[in-house]
Length: 344
Image 1 (cartoon, rainbow, N blue to C red):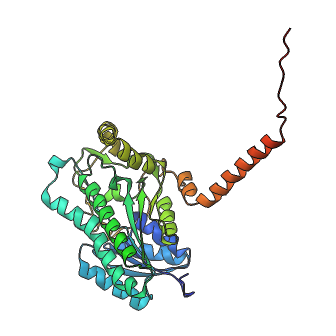
Image 2 (cartoon, helix red, strand yellow):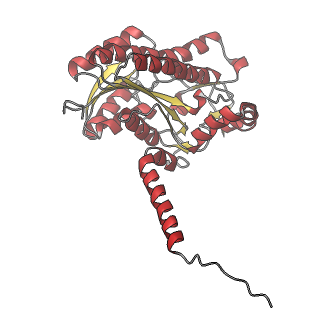
């Protein structure tokens, strides 16, 4: 619920599949009104059914986030039909699995337009409404790759790093202006989403996430939590923490490890179809729905103990203090009489 007691109004880009779809359902379970932004009609209609089944109210707004006018029109439609926007979650992304020497300028431009400028466009539309009201939260769905780039996804890694730079600048400006609008970034691990079915690839074998892999519902839980807690940034799963901290401490070692593990680690043993459709230039979910989950369900984790620990710091601190108190009490009440050693 929003501060006024009415259902919370949430906008999600990339809502037709993957993390966006799972997040829409998670917000709906809280009774939210959800503006569903994406390009694919079939995916959006299925997402609307999921939102309504989960107890929320949804609004389909077909939108290409690379077009700022479309994003602005979508924001206007959401506020007109659902009410003032409380949360804006930027999720939409695109990538190309290929080494740099096989990429072209048009592909770099398109990935940047979707994965970076799409976030900028969404953020600008959210700010136009949130700043005058002096409230609201913007959630940027990021990745460990915003800190630690890996081979075969240079365009995507660069775009996520750009989102982090943009977000940090805006956060400082909001602090300077003493604004109550909050912006946060959620850095994700490898996720089992449909991007590995519809993402463009120039590799000989099918693309896959770098393990360990988590279900998109884990990501969605992190998005919802971040929307309601004023945390600067949230790192989801131990693999995210390891990647980010290793980059800070030993980036050269990270380069070496990425070369040794992340190249082959992003491909399965199955050959890819070079003629299959991809979502880089247009939606692939126009006639069929891909849902939230991808093809790696058997190995994907449904929970992250690290995420639970990170979002329950107070409880863990109390438990640690209690344990320390018990240890100290045991020490005080124990037999501390000096022992004498007999000598014969």
